[in-house]
Amino acid sequence: MKLDILAFGAHPDDVELGCGATIAKEISNGKKVGIVDLTRGELGTRGSAELRDEEAANSAKILGVSVRENLGFADGFFTNDKEHQLEIIKMIRKYQPEIVLCNAVDDRHIDHPKGSQLVSDACFLSGLIKIPTVLNGVSQEKWRPKNVYHYIQWKNITPDFVVDVSGFIDVKVASVLAYSSQFYDPTSKEPETPITSKNFTDSISYRANDLGRLIGVEHAEGFTSERYVAVENLDKLI
Image (cartoon, rainbow, N blue to C red; front, top):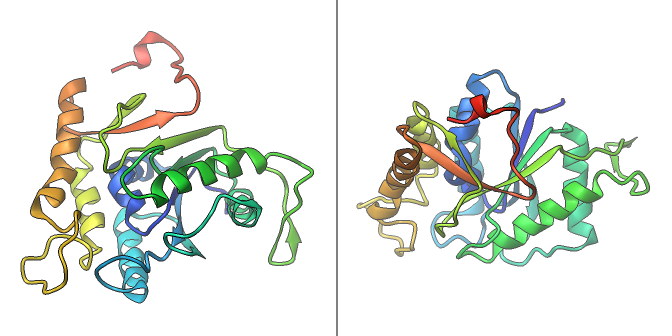
């Protein structure tokens, strides 16, 4: 299956938090989008890997993505090496996306910048014909995405561009809250974490609202780019 966009996240819920509204908007415009989670989030303070698997599946249905896979890398301990790069290359060549979305280039959680660089490196390597990969017994053709964009997570990184996601924030919030074990729940007896506060849950909307304010729309999501962002002409700017 060829996809238009393939979004990678170090943990289940990274993609939803970072670019869930953008994905929902692209799908509504007829694009085929997939998600690949690098780990099962097994080191998360709350819940379990098995529960996160269920939550990720439910969230994928809410967003309407065409496919979701999990590579089963070790949460907290995966590295940017040949072994891990090859597994990501297989996913890129399998789905042949034009655009790859991945973790923030810098963030509070160590897996986020690690995952960001790992996926970025794999996107380049995937285009090299002399790196052979085989998936399900079939040799794969080389493939390099046209663009790699990094969504923004905990830290307020200045975006290189923003996407107007007005009308899609409710889908994003619903996809995030599908991970009920991870976020604000006043009845939970489990330990508190930086993402279990009501303020964090509220930030999903108010951060998008603030970015939207800055460009004159209701809501927006920001991204950083690995190359100059170009427009066809000035009429394409909003």
